[in-house]
Image 1 (cartoon, rainbow, N blue to C red):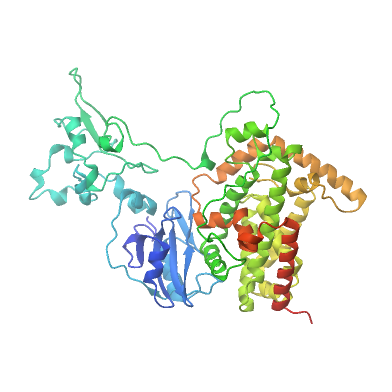
Image 2 (cartoon, rainbow, N blue to C red):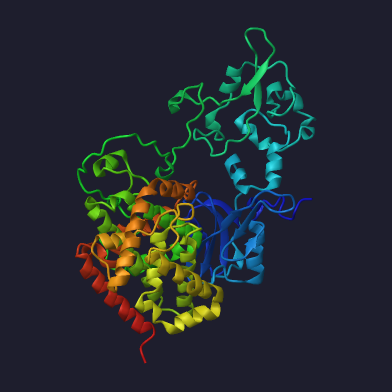
Length: 574
């Protein structure tokens, strides 16, 4: 029995506009409540709900949770925050009919769909994104099809529907067969002439191979020796101007650097390090900041707020894991960098004397992430519910970063550092509102996250590569940089635990690398969000293009005073 989600094709819905950029979507939204659903071009084609609310356009990524196929249930669920739906149309209907806010943090309500004016031109890759049993059944059924790319419009129509006038004009090789179909044809045109008839200029053939190739009809290839005919898979011929030979398939798209296969380490003698290594990406033109910027530009802060609201905490956690792995030297380390530092990973380098530069960069990254997280709460000058929603967003991000989930412990330490800052923890009315409006989130923070962070700082928390992708490096980094505080007896015990943890962390670096690469497999980051989480961008955002050159201690002290003033303005002392 098929469920109610079978056959629901959201591309036929009037509110779905297909691939659309953020700017194009915002141009269609005119009044509060206007909304549409689009396929994000910058985020792997994932569905995004764009809604106009309180004079601005907001964008909300719809999370798709894949399920193991079983009879009588959907193969995926769709969600914005907590509630999950068996299909995207069901999600949209629920929010529109009940007039519930799309997210609690924004309060945006979708009420009027922006109707699509032109039909969507679908391709096989778009069909595969639907992942519905009805669509899979449609592609696998034995259907009539013309072999010319322009004839793909008849895909999905049965032979019986074309048995009348015009059926005789179809050549014999136009009846496609799948690998599992019985032999139907005996006399076919030569393969070379058929391959030449597939014209790339018709717009249906692409030189770039899809991620999951569709099942291509098979053709007979007469054997010159007179043996019975066999069949082979038809490989479309690409013109020589595109640089591809006629007898080879199109090249696969190059995998991102964080998915590159790890080369087997060859036995080699230790080489003396040539110089200290930095894993910070080189300066490049920013897509969010101009060449010269002032600290805390309001327009940039507004853009960042919308960017983080658009992404689910799980998606933000993966973006943070990617940037943390690059900053730590766990992923993306080149052969030249390995030769220069004498080891193969930043987790090993930070335990060595010549890892001082890396340790300094990691300490600065931790501090700027903490300050940016605190600014996300203290910068909310609106109603009390807005600050409570910002607190909830940080707690949910910490839950997504914890061991067993994304497993980015440096990111978790930064988010928890922002929540535990004195300027944030003193906001009693804001925390009370969080407990009143989001009780489960507040309980998770008090009962799960705070004890976990305390154990990690003491060197007693979970650190196995199976549940952790990037270990908690802050205790070892602080110790090696001479920062160890506390009573003498406790400090000695913590010193031993920290040193043992650093030794184990360096030994398990290959396992952590594989765990991080596994979590980031098939992950396609948003370019702007990835930039917003880098150390260089946050440094310029907080202190400006000119102030970022000041010493770190001076910059941190100045910004601490700024946060204290913001905290007092929000909730003055009585």
